[in-house]
Every structure is written in structure tokens, then in C-alpha cells.
Image (cartoon, rainbow, N blue to C red; front, side, top):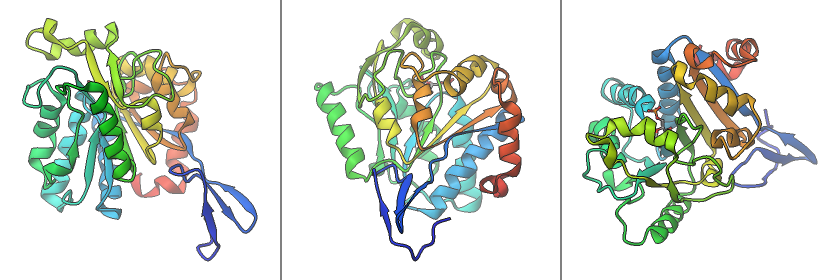
Length: 292
Ligand code: GLP
């Protein structure tokens, strides 16, 4: 714990993981922490509690949001928290990871609709403070730059929620995405098309491209929180967390992040080698005391 009377010079913003205090370097980098919960519901509950706590500590939180089936239960829990315990979204800003190219915000398969349906329409968020890239912009490159500019203007993302695709992507950062990439248009990989096409009435109509925050953009968030549940994610979670850092599995780049919490259920943890160590951390480290 830093002595608050010490003069601290923060370096490498927005990472803030190193601080200089009376001539000593103090490394507060946590890296990846992996938490295993017994089932999907308790894993989602932990994610929702972390988000709610961060929002209570800082009502002006800049929250990075993710889509996908895994996130639905997290948003349902946040809505419940808003209704039952007055969790206040009125001052927070949100930035979503991605949107399909070619879909209008009103399209029922767009991520704009997903967010409206699962979160925005149920809480007291100011819709003007919610941001997703426009997949219909006539100038997609300009749209990507505008999006990066807005994140910068908001002061950067405080807490970024993440899911993981079966191809190991975060956002739509498909295999071979540059680890320093910024918001841009990305062609979707066959695995992603196979995973998401069934969600469309006509699977053939699923767009083949999307605007996505880059891996570099995501790595600049002050804290990342990735949720993965179900046996279908077990292989890719093991690769992302315990495998080498590789652009073939862009979630593995989170190993470079100063503070990334990965929360999985038992099913998604099956292929991890160091499960006992991860369990010990959750059961014993003071950071997790209030969450146990
Ligand atoms: C989409 C999103 C990703 C998300 C993934 C996971 O591909 N672009 O950001 O991580 O879905 O989807 P699910 O939670 O349905 O497995």
C-alpha cells in the first residue's frame, strides 16, 4: 500500500501500474488474475458485482461494454441491481467494443439493438452517453478515427468488459490482428461467422465485416474484465491465459495488461493447468475478501 503522504509521480499513463515514491519503484501491476466460480450464474454475479462496485466508487465511470450471449446474464443482473438497489447509471459513459458493418442501429441483429434491449432501455443511462461505432457510416475509416477520438476525449476506458469468441477474439479482433491495432474494420473469420450466423433469421445475411476496437485500444483500458462460461470455451480460455501471447488468439494479448481479471465457470476452466493456484488466490488474497 502506498503511503498517501508520499509524493507519487505516475508514469506510463493510462497504465498507472508503476509509481515512483521516495526514490523507489513500486510495481503494482497485477497482470492476469483468473477466478473460477462453480457455475455460469455465480460467474456472472461476480462480474456484475465488480461492475456495480466500480460504478458506485466512481459514478462517472467510463465503461467498455461487450455483446454476445455470455453478457446477457451480466446485464440482467445489473438491471436488477438498478431496480432493487438503485445502481445509478446517470453519469456514466459507455463505449461498446464493436458493431457489424452494414447494419443500421435499428436492425434487430445490430449490437446497438442488443445493448438497448439488454441494458440501456432498463436503466437510467443517458442514451447520449452511450457509444457504439456506426456500421452504416459512408466513411468507415473516418468513423473508426472518430470513435478512437471519443474514447480519448472521455479520458479513456476505466473498466472494459470482454467476452471471448471461439476463435479467441476479443471484440472482433480475429486471428492475426496486430496486437497494437486500433479501432478499424475487420473481416470476420469463418469460426466467428459459424458461431454468430445462427443468431440471424437468415444466417447468410450475417455481415462479413465489423468495426472493432483494436487490441491496442482494449489494452489501454485501465482494467479489463473477461467472462467466459461453458465447456465450449474451455480450450480457448486455456490458450488465452496459459498459452503464448500470439496474434492468432488475440485474447492472449491480455497477458500484457496490467490489470485483467478473467472469470470463468467450472466448465470453462476444465483445460487450465494451474486451477488449484487460481482457487487459492480467490480464497486467500485480501483483494477478493468482500467477493467471497
Ligand atoms: C461476439 C463479440 C465478442 C464476444 C463474442 C462472444 O463475437 N464480438 O465481443 O466476445 O461474441 O460471444 P458469446 O458470448 O455468445 O460466446
